[in-house]
Every structure is written in C-alpha cells, then in structure tokens.
Image 1: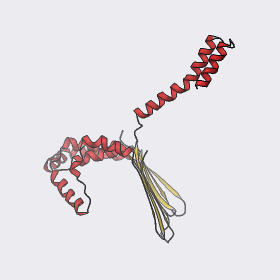
Image 2: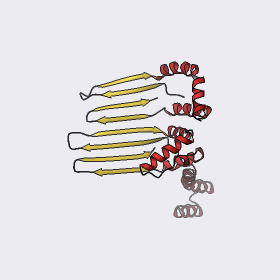
Image 3: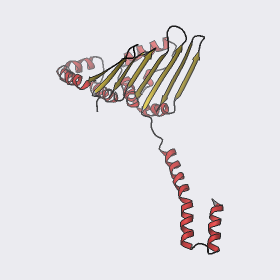
Length: 86
Length: 148
C-alpha cells in the first residue's frame, strides 16, 4: 500500500504546535495521469541512459510502498518539525 | 525437580496419593519445562526480523546554540528498495561515483552492491547497534543507530 497521508507537525518557540495533514492520495491522483502521458518520454530517457525501464518502474514502486511508517523528527531548542508518512 | 518427583513417588509408595494423582502431579511438574524448552528452540530458530532502522542524535550544547534532537525511523523495506535502486545505476555513473568516493578516502565499491547480497546485508543490520558518545568542553553529542 502506498502512503496516503503525511502528517507534518511544526512546533514554534511559543510551544504552539501546527499539525498539517497532507493527503498524499491527491498528489498521486495528479501524478499518475501525468506519468501515463509522459511514459513514452520516460521510457526513451531510461533507454538513453542505459537504465532498464521495467526495473526502474519496479524499484520506484517499491520505494513508494516502503515509505509507509517513515518518521523524521528534528528538535532544536524549543522549536521542532516532525514528518510522519502513513 | 528430581526432589519433587521423588517426593511424589514416596507419597505414592506410602499410599498417600493414588497412581492417577501421582501421574497428574508428575505431568504438572514437567509442563513448564517442556514449554520453556520449546520456546527457546523457537527463539533460536526464527529470530524476529527488525522492521525499522532508527537513528537518534541527541546534542546538548551549553553555549548559545541550545540542545538539538534528531529522531529518524526508516523502514527496512525502504533500505531494500534503496539497494535495488543502486543496482540500476548505469556502469559509467557507477564508475564516476566510485572514483568520487575513493577521492574522499572511503574504500567502498558501489558495484559490489548486488540484489543477491541484499538479504545478507539486511540480516547483518539487525544485529547493528552503534552508540557514539562525544563530549567537548561545550557540547555533548550522543548518536545511536540501531534496528527495532
């Protein structure tokens, strides 16, 4: 399952937390038709760079699927940012 | 354990308990042992595979910078996909990347990363735990890399 939502939490120095729920599914809905339209160009580009297009698509899909449960959290002083992908 | 068994047999010989009761008592004595030995066997046979690689950086600065904390959780599946991605790099790009890595003094050959070595690499990572503790006059940095 590809990630559908990313949660971005921003914490300012005043201890106020802004939590943004980013619906990644909307992003995929935009990207997929574009990828289909540009697939011949992508294929030609892969062949020109001597990259197996099927392998590239397979690995790209695996990376997309593996992004689930990725978490990055950075805090500095009282400010911080956290990104979780579900 | 033998002492308990001997007591049960003695009680049986003294007719304090019946043969059925003695059998049940001995079976009750043996149950926990059998359970724990089978559990140990399963633990050694199938080791739980880690799902995430975690990197934690904890920096305490006594100066004006202040403390910094970094906490990154990367799914192992993403590492697997990343290694497969390295396998797609064209040979000429791989060569240039290797040269750049060697110039930095790192003796590592990217062309050695192959999908067939992937599972072994991930298995080795499961036992990995790196703790770096650095203390300066003003800063104290602790880096932890481990799998969970």
